[in-house]
Image 1 (cartoon, rainbow, N blue to C red):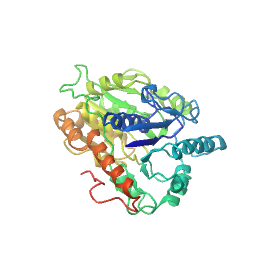
Image 2 (cartoon, rainbow, N blue to C red):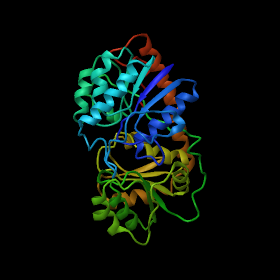
Image 3 (tube, rainbow, N blue to C red):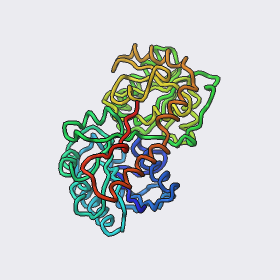
Length: 363
């Protein structure tokens, strides 16, 4: 098939990735190409040239790395950039459009493109994206990346399907033993909603060294909450590319995830499991969907003492069970199988709901 992938334009789709959505979009384009599809990725400037992207405009996020959900503002320049993207899609001879962006315009124009569109929901409802979803509801299929996220959208899209995100298991190889020097690993955007400051406090309480990596996406948060907590037992690794991140995740005794919002998926959790690393996390959003008792421990939201307890307990779990969970439930090849099935269905006729057998609810 000839497939157009629409990415959001806030950040480039390249390493080191700004976040999980960028990493997922990159992996999706690569995997579909390996299957022999003619994939055209529409993205902002700076996107990985090996993907042969169509570059629409400079990244529209601010230099500090604004969260595309938190920064829901849409200005005229961004609207114009998406209009340019859609004009190219309309004349591009595509069989299907995979909409991975967080902007309402592709949804408002979906019925006029002459190409069936599949929209994947990666975030809870937020304005003005909801306006676009309402405009397209009943005219195209929507899928959410977790059961929890599907419930978040149920009032707007009661029939949304579920196709969980997956990871390239070859890119996150299994490591049977952690590094000799024990440490915990945290990775993600360094913003208030990811809660790194709570992970630091919990690691100190648990007596475990914490290493963390990610872009400093809010300077005020870094200066006010993170920098004062640095010192013995806390190591800032910077913003890592995939190879370095994999090495750090695989060597950890436990990976820590400390969201202060309802996490719609949690790609870093699956990446840790693929490496064989158990996870300690706050019980928020989709994280209970991903982890079970063999692969992690959940803590009460925002509770530093309970997260410290979860870190101590999770660090003793078996690594083989973690890898098995990733292989059985979160293999990217299974995810691509499901998307291909959905693409084939919408090619024939744009459905009003997700066909039986396409949506997959992960246990």
